[in-house]
Amino acid sequence: MKPPPFAYHDPASVDEAVSLRAEHEFDSLVLAGGQSLVPMLNIRLARPELLIDINRIEDLRTVRAPTPTSSSARPCASTTSRSTRWSARSSRC
Ligand SMILES: Cc1cc2nc3c(=O)[nH]c(=O)nc-3n(C[C@H](O)[C@H](O)[C@H](O)COP(=O)(O)OP(=O)(O)OC[C@H]3O[C@@H](n4cnc5c(N)ncnc54)[C@H](O)[C@@H]3O)c2cc1C
View 1 (cartoon, rainbow, N blue to C red):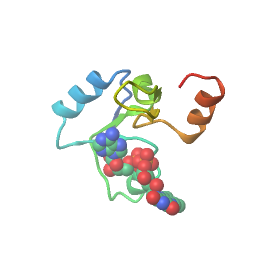
View 2: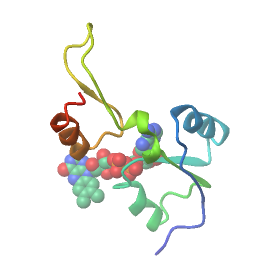
View 3: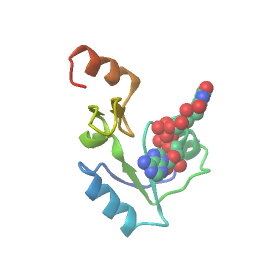
């Protein structure tokens, strides 16, 4: 089976994603890695009218450097294991 039709947005910022989500609170879903959501779409357990893909939001994909109040580096919500290793190698965190 294939997913029912839905609109697709891939916002470039957290603010844009949040306002899309606020505007479509009850008929939208957020797409992160898609491991759970894509199968749910395919078998039509999820039927959003709008899919908000957060993968293009650079702010969610970085690793935050340690700060005076937090001694460890902090991966953001969409940071992948692969990009964490890349950040460590390139001394970006
Ligand atoms: C074959 C298989 C094996 C797995 N094995 C494991 C395992 O060993 N251990 C384990 O812990 N998990 C496992 N999982 C679960 C997998 O890790 C989850 O699918 C994963 O945590 C979902 O992350 P995702 O980024 O793919 O989310 P998605 O599939 O993109 O989204 C999942 C749900 O979260 C919502 N969502 C996503 N991001 C946001 C957001 N920022 N704000 C609000 N809602 C959001 C989506 O709308 C959706 O409802 C497995 C899954 C599969 C298919």
